[in-house]
Amino acid sequence: MSTYIGLVWAIARKDLLVEFRTRERLTSLGAFVVLIGVLFNFSIDTAVVRPQDIAPALIWMTIIFGGMLGMGRTFRLEEQDGALAGILQSPIPLDAFYLGKVLGNFLLLSVMVALVFLVFGAFFRLTFSGNPVTLFGVVALGVLGFVSLTTLFSAMATRSSMGEGLLPVLVFPLLVPVLVYGATATGRLYAGRPIAEVTGNLRMLAAFAIIFTVSGAGLFRFVIEE
Amino acid sequence: MSEKQIRWAIGILGALGVATVVLLHWMVFFWVPTESTMGIVQRIFYVHVPAWWVAFLGFGLVALCSAVYLWLGDERLDRAALAGAEAGMIFTTIGLLTGPLWGRVAWGTWWEWEPRLTSALILWFIYLGYFLVRRSTANPEQGKRFAAVVGVIGVLDIPLIHVSVTWLRSLHPQAVILSADNPMNLDPAMTATIGVGLLAFSLIFASLFLARYAVAGYEHELDLRDAALPGTQAVEV
Image 1 (spheres, rainbow over the protein chains, first blue to last red):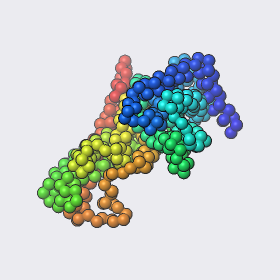
Image 2: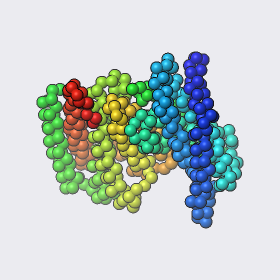
Image 3: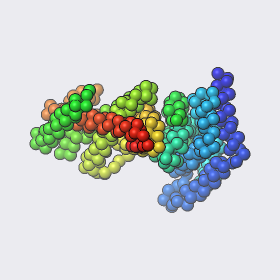
Image 4: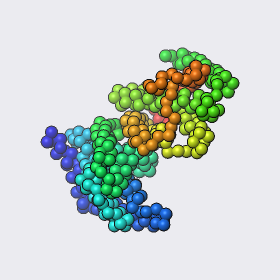
């Protein structure tokens, strides 16, 4: 078991190390988050709607669009350098490879999500009066569900002739539950509503994350093998 | 089944299907009584409900055949999944077109973000992805595997999508045909018309399914022959 976790961590560590050294994805994601925050702010007529009312929905749309931008490149490096063939020939189980990629993407996206909350909090003048632990749970489960699906389909998109353009077509329809439960729970927590109002959301986000992490691990070999 | 038997089955099922569709339309326009609350627009249900029935039948086949195809790798299961997806897509489109026609009169709007309508639209897009991914690879075998993965993930996600959108709000008329609270409370003529509709669409579906399954088999055979010819490469379909 500890060996398996070690393999998962080895893959995630490799991705994070590459990212730490090149800062390729984090730089573009950071710039994307700040710019989209600025653009969203300019696109809202404050005489008609209060920015605070729609900020939670915009936060989740930014997470999804930004995440798509980052996750689309998950397997590009391996594919370009022929490293994928090396990983496939190594004795690492493919489900551990997938889970390592999910873990690496999850940690990377968590940095972006923290930035999203900071940027939107400042630009939309949001004051948080809810329970921060519950908000952390909502975001962590939502991001895990998002990453588990996107990592699987990113492998598919990288190996297809349509490339990254295929990813949104495949993933957006499947992400509806994450968006519905994530955005409503975030909105309610920002509005200071009781935790009891979001426990159902937490359960559904957890179910989504578990179902697609497990099924992704099982189905990954059909996507990655030649 | 031999090739000849499949051709006969396609012809017989198709002819019976067309005849039953003609009978259905006669019943809808001239025979069945008008529903008291919704009026004449309710008659579209006799097309709408059977269309959804066969659409779900098609997508159920996609999920089942895709999962078993990934497990066993049998080409025939992939062909069955493809045939189910194409036939299912046709009937989903019919369901998505007839729903708003009814909604325009009943709800006063062409489109409403109502859970079943929303789930149906998302289902349509999931299977659009199924076809796109299938044709997006240089290696057709890989495309088949990708499509099967989309089929399996799609069927796992549909209940979650439906629960999530239902959680918001529901405007759709509740099921009355198989409602547990009030089972089979329809006028017998209405029940008969719905029954004929289900039969007609099921026959058409079976005919289309078999025809597409047979064509996919011919495509596969052609690929094998092209690959066997010296100096040629398999045609990418």
